[in-house]
Length: 391
Ligand code: PMP
Image (cartoon, rainbow, N blue to C red; front, side):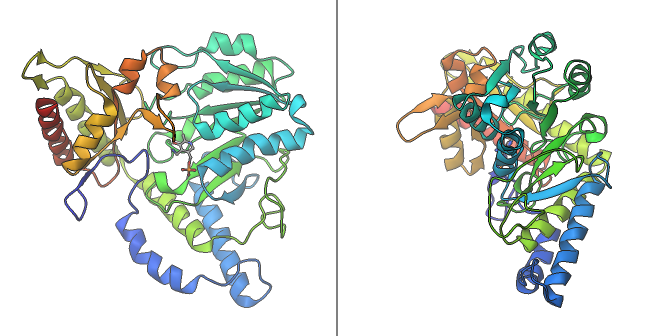
């Protein structure tokens, strides 16, 4: 519950900043303004703080600390663009790129890849099963020694499915050892155990506002300084010329502290999230519709996925209508449709699971954050029952 009594369960979209971080934020905002690239003492002091933030971020990742670089970006979207378009720039031209990705990737991965395809790149989107797990036979068939980059989400943002990146890495090593493996860990950091899953990443995307840090800051971690990448943003040559622009010292420090805090949460916290997840899964099966009796529920998130995301559809109910009605009752969750100015279309990622438009339009995404308590789930279930009754 938030300070205004709202039940906030849309944490896959954005999380509230950790309260401890808010206390540190004010003084940082006040004091950390000198330009970190300036050649005076104040600039140097901020540069040191950014170096500390880099070390702090790397300390929670299973990547080689002495070889990894962190490029601070404006968020996960820019980090994904830098990984893919920066790779294309490094190989020389789009037509030298041969990329493999999932149909369920985030738009900030799919859109730059489609942009590259339009400019001549080869793009192969893999099949997945109806739980969202990639078809590894399709991967083995698609990959070859021309493949230059593969990009997958560790945790898919709409349904929370976790990919078997260990198996993916071994297929890459066998068939295309020259290719780069880019993993989008935006929804994964601090939510699932990355100790084996992220070790195989050459490039790793992270975002501040999904881990109880600020929005507008993210990072692309490059696991080896020999990995070729060219910048997308040109200017003063900051960040080893990979991303020009004055550094957001405050945002970078805050994101690194959030990463440290969320990764430091213990198994008790993760059990607590699993308990809320189970409470929700069982609660939605008990909804009743006055006219039709019980409500048919299709749960799109498998239990082996991220415990932080439960996506489901209530048959005969529109997700956007239900989520709006819930928000009028002070309960905030996500819907599974993407709005553009002209139309509302079913989420392409949900369609890639093989759902009909109808079921995809029904999707409701509940996503947990570190602030949630079981009572939030009960209030959500109560609100959902009221919406179903009034529908
Ligand atoms: N990747 C994934 C998997 C995401 O969920 C998001 C945010 N929805 C992004 C990338 C983009 O991150 P940001 O909002 O920081 O640009």
